[in-house]
Image (cartoon, rainbow over all chains, first blue to last red; front, side, top):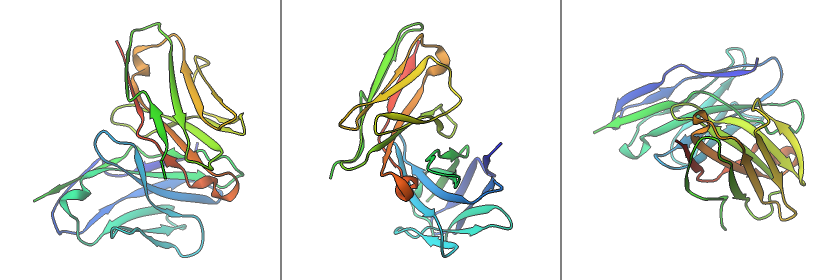
Length: 115
Length: 114
């Protein structure tokens, strides 16, 4: 079965420190990869996506993720986090077998930024 | 421009009752998908609709149904509610074709079944 694994359920980190949130997926076909962020009591916001082309993708607020096909990973990184980055982060995949649009999500990683 | 809107924001029902949740997509988006997010877990795909037709269904019982209207808004219905149906129900809209992958989520409807 197709799946997404987020390797850490919680990641505590101090403000201005670097962070990496890990994501692995299982697939034997082409995939589209996403990171969504969810702030408390809110819906999901698209943070960044990999559809094709450059394997390194960036968001407007300093996050980046790298698609690694050989390791089937799409880890999210930020060199210096802020208190406002505290949220739940979800890695998701759409398998590129037609216009399904079915997002498969990981279990989520809670990023806790401490002052 | 308005984003995806959902109503109601919160809902409390008792076991056995029926509930209808509503979603209005972003203007110009013709595809709507529904997801269930149980507390502490990632969202699970329930349905996808495009041009009023069901285009995808997740692993949910027949108690769950949905429809899409000519204006592309959508309703999700859940019959015979169970305690385990308590969750945040998210609606997402997107364009069709290659842009289908870019889905935009609404704030969700929080359903509590007692």
